[in-house]
Image (cartoon, rainbow, N blue to C red; front, side, top):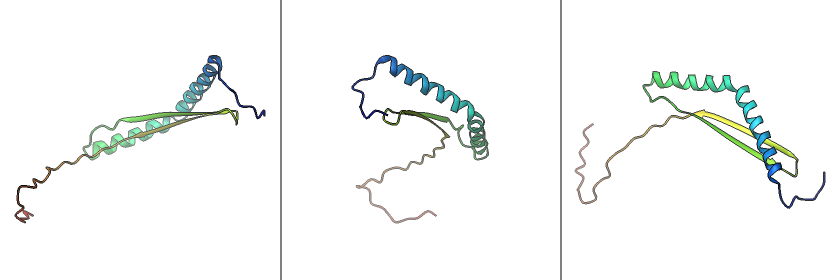
Length: 103
């Protein structure tokens, strides 16, 4: 492999990188489609059991083009997300606390 570093990348070469990344992402998504569905269904069942909101599915795609190693690596990640939100009023610094515990 040459130790020279490219001074620029042409549009054609960039488009070729994109095509490889898209092909790899498509392949990975189809290869993992059953795992993605299983994870999502499991979380849907948990949501129904615990009376939570329907969980969204998050998919992320990452790609690394390493010119020195002459390789493109594409990564997909998938997950469903649960979120709990609690709120409480802020204490009023001008209002004295009485130390009364209703519990």
